[in-house]
Image (cartoon, rainbow, N blue to C red):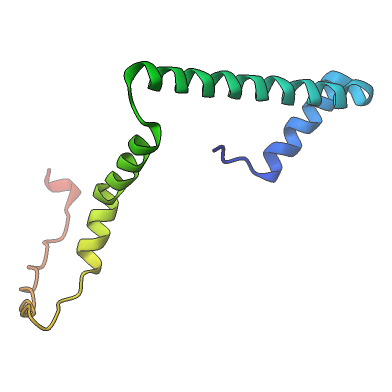
Length: 109
């Protein structure tokens, strides 16, 4: 979910240690974890309530969205570029050589 590295965690821990002190830091971390669990529970309940009121099946909707991933532009481009010609399809002829670009002259403009 979050891209948090070791350095970021270390910075947050040092700031927490400076703000709360070594005596209160474990209690503050436990309270923060409890609040995070409650917020996640409320969000999950709200999501389920919205899905129920709209008459949606969340599992089916998630599967549909996941199936749309194959149409992501990067994936489409990768499939097109990595597609090697098969025995049935003729190979394309060598592309024409590109014309040589003239030298750039900044004083000419």
